[in-house]
Length: 133
Image (cartoon, rainbow, N blue to C red):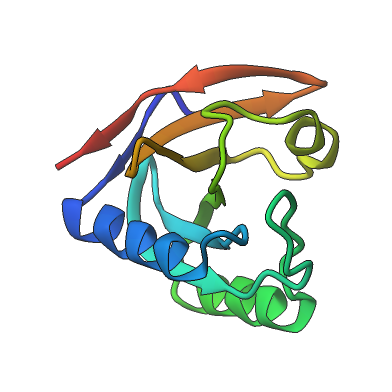
């Protein structure tokens, strides 16, 4: 379990631009890196095309996993947006959490995107601090 996740401001801005461009639909992607430091942000299309749910497009998700492996990186996080809130994980997020990674949620609060990280395991979640450098 990661106690924190570190990403650059540039990576954060890339994630915000991605989710903003897809709002009011949810958008999603993967965070790859080493240890607790993100080195790559990979955008994956939301096959669900829904304002309240995301399903990563399977072929693109598989290609991203292969890219992560071939570059010697690890899957550190999965990010997605909650364009209309909430700022925390939803019951669907908890039910569908399939990986031991940090789940990063970008939620829109009064026209600003707020970013929070969570560790979800065995139906329970706790917040993981995100460090932006």
